[in-house]
Length: 186
Image (cartoon, rainbow, N blue to C red; front, side, top):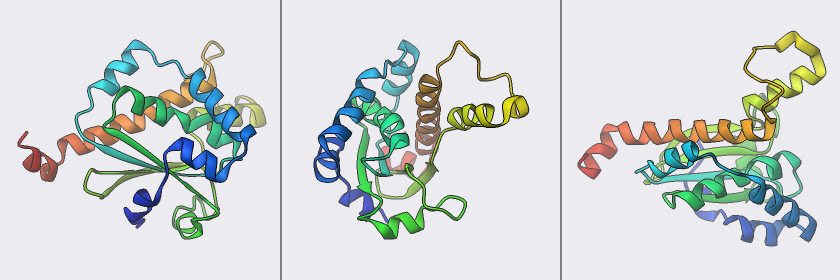
């Protein structure tokens, strides 16, 4: 299991990009952050979160999947500061990369959600379901058609919704935790 100390070693997005990226990388990540427009329903969901969640993102500043997905967490934290986001570089933190392999391989991004007191709650990585559906459709045609992805929805917005759904799931795990309910008296 990944130690919470990795979260504590992590950097906020701007610091991560200064340390591990180029001006081009920073421009690309910031463009994604600016392109994310949350719906009123998404904002209401994020504002409803009452438990602190620590989001650790194993990433590469150079990674297109990272730059096109991970700024969503920074957008969520702008809406609710109980969402704390930190990044670690996959090459600098090779031990974390090994611990967070997916299907036996090194992948980024990998997102690990921790409780306020450092317990791992969930991890999710590489691409969201919407991105995988889109890739399957382009590579294999309708062999993976589910009827969920439509031509009127952008994969970008669906991926943001996927990440928010996992963040919401984590929030409910934390909110309903007997340990945390006792701690907070709710």
